[in-house]
Image 1 (cartoon, rainbow, N blue to C red):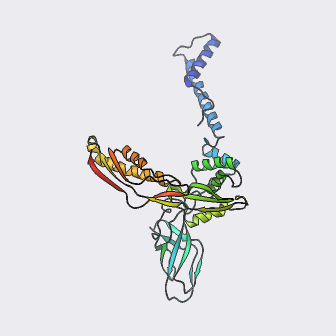
Image 2 (image 1 turned 180 degrees about the horizontal axis):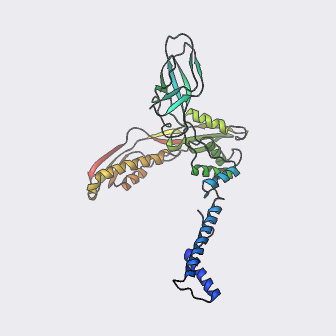
Image 3 (image 1 turned 120 degrees about the horizontal axis):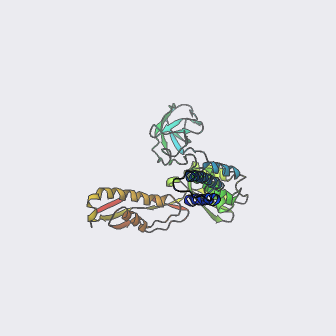
Length: 365
């Protein structure tokens, strides 16, 4: 918070005592009860100053608390985004040789763990000569944890019995689930809106409208690929790749007549994948002999931090020296990096780890 009204407590008390003594021509000694009264008045002034500073800070999106952001959001017509349901496409395999059509009702649930459920978004009527049908499904509740980044094939349990359905399987990675928008993300969108505008057009305005389309979106790059052609690349929070359901949701909202300039052709995609590996050898100082297992654990955490650094944002280059720094800071004495190689990642791409991490301990040095 900015301190617009600055008051030093000691100076305030001394000024109060001096003013009283100058006015009354009396000396206030240490035990004088009038000194205590001036202390009390000073405390009340400090409380009032803090309230004034707090109130002024609520006028600015960079420092406002939740209530202040609510007022600013209303002023700029930037509402806080509610939670979103994760999306995934599920293949329903049907009984062969059956007679007649099969109806898969809207709301038919599937799961991968018996705790997190997805439900069909619409009813599907499947002809007798069809072996399977792919249906868009949405999580039954809003949220990120447990619903995003479920790999293809993992969702495999049909919860609600449907006659003629013999099996189910997720055919892509689930994404798009999000909790209610965080205060910092809301603050960022208010700032973007203040720069930008009621319709898309500038880079910042497109980013604003894209992030406003779904609260699960973490990073956006807007590229001008041709005259009047706008190509947006999006990445979900925590480095999760968007699926087709989320891309369709974003395109529909940003392409609305009150958002997209009439002259623009707008497309939105997920990023290209730049695969990399992690393999290194390391030693630990003899002085850390009694901390070997702890350091090994910290090195594992450091690798996870490096992975998050390169995978959670578009266009983040893969730099081996960055991995080296993480491992050394975790307690290693020496580090020999085998992979990754130094790799430039463009704005339309994101790095993704391929294969298992190899961390070889070479003893003391």
